[in-house]
Length: 278
Image (cartoon, rainbow, N blue to C red; front, side, top):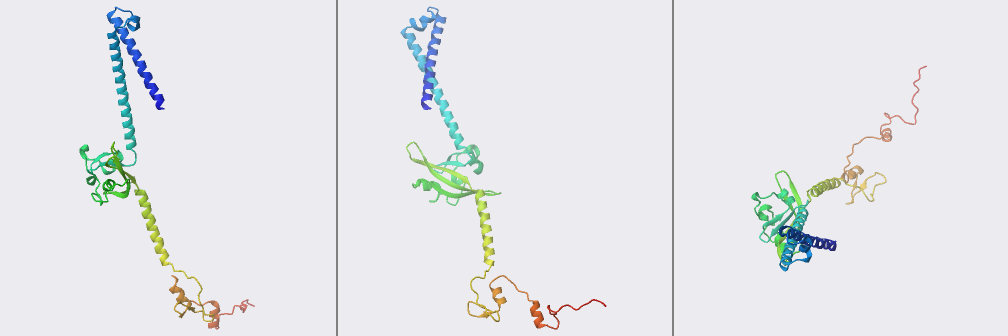
């Protein structure tokens, strides 16, 4: 791809040189009228005229290359600007804490300073670690190649959370001239984590209220009392009440009712009296 582009440029330059030579010969023949076009073009060209044409061709070619280079620089600047102005906020800060460059996503969150004047990062987005040893700039200046931390942006309406990633900003000699910071918005993830934490706490609280009976329970075969861990025999309802959330209400089953109150409880095996009228 690069070879094809170079060939196209050479073809443009050769074509431009030929066109300038033809144009200059045509103008010379028309203005002076002493030579025919072909003589002015090839056969009767003085040394002075050749030098002039060469100077004109070289100047035109240099102008073309300059314009082409300017166009290429503008295209690369546009590409860099498009890359920089993506959805992730990006900020470049020098070693004096000055914000030298930032993309539109960054300014839309933290606000652009009035008059587009330079502002220091600790003034623009103050935090607990600003101008301390835990500051991202200080960590990078102290030799770290990458620094990742969580930060937030508080406003009157809401709080937004970000994952801050800082890397060195190098010059042509690979010397650290500042840091490049990117901010990944994790507000929604933070909200889901908080909701998940609340749900887990609620479930844990519910589990703490549940008491399960498990294992072997020593129970008397006659009176049905249960022996607890301390060796005491307790009524079955007392033991279950102490080891669960169950509550008891007392009544009498039909068998016990017939046993305790035979006069008031009919025997289920005795057929009911015949109530048929004669």
